[in-house]
Length: 387
Ligand SMILES: [Fe+2]
Image (cartoon, rainbow, N blue to C red):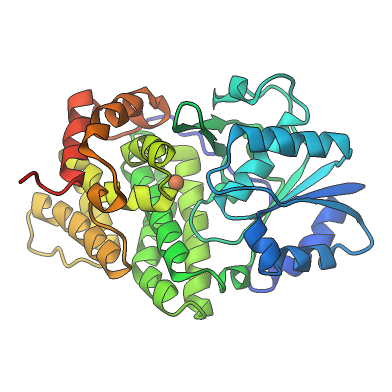
């Protein structure tokens, strides 16, 4: 673990059932004259976008509702162009990680010249963007509190991130009532994304006391609540716990970073159009198994946070219980087990491992030194054994 700890967080966080009603006050506090609501077609159909528009009646507001899953650079360009042309001075991002990441990127692109590609990587964004309020409607990405946005590079069939303090929201509003309507599959996938954030942050080389506390709390809450949120979607206590867990996981990985689950899930999602949470969930136990030997005590802590009985077990056996706990959670909530189940061919292993090696935001914090051979080993185990 690193000796010098840098923790980054957003300025203002509003949480709780009904907290969406604070939106107008927040808009006024930020002194906006014209607002752009950035969201996706599903939230328009579900009536949630309209709820937001109604809360802001009497104010000048436009809507960009064309965010697709795994948003492309092109979508950010179009969205930023709309913000610029309509002279909006505040962006509200409403949705899952895709809508929030689009909103974050569009907000900075308004005030930064050139191509979006030029800002991929760490701290390349020079100027602050227009202010933004982020409202998550899924419990998983933690995007509302992080300085990261992940975009799809269609031509290269992969995803890459922009990391910048200018991506941090001015305000995040977390209202668990907005997540009540999430289908079971999305609840499962996004919940496993949050669990991956928390586990990767906890074993990260950049972990620090603050991120450790957030990560372990998130792991415990997800272990205790994700099954209920998936199978009893109207259970507001489980929804509230999952939204908080996603927030804590976001606060953890926002400063401690993620590791090779994300490092491989980005090319996997980009090449095969697999939902981010599912790509993570399938890879998670295999990356944990490979990393285990580099951070045994940390994996034992994770096992304990997931409610595994470890008393009397050796350190190694206790650490392995963390993997078993993750596998049984995944199985219970219907996550596919192997990459074969996602129609990924074995021939994809080499390009996935090669791309994974280039993702320095994940290779550097990963607890075990990352090698091409190691990534091939992880991927090999993620497929059904060869006959
Ligand atoms: Fe993620």
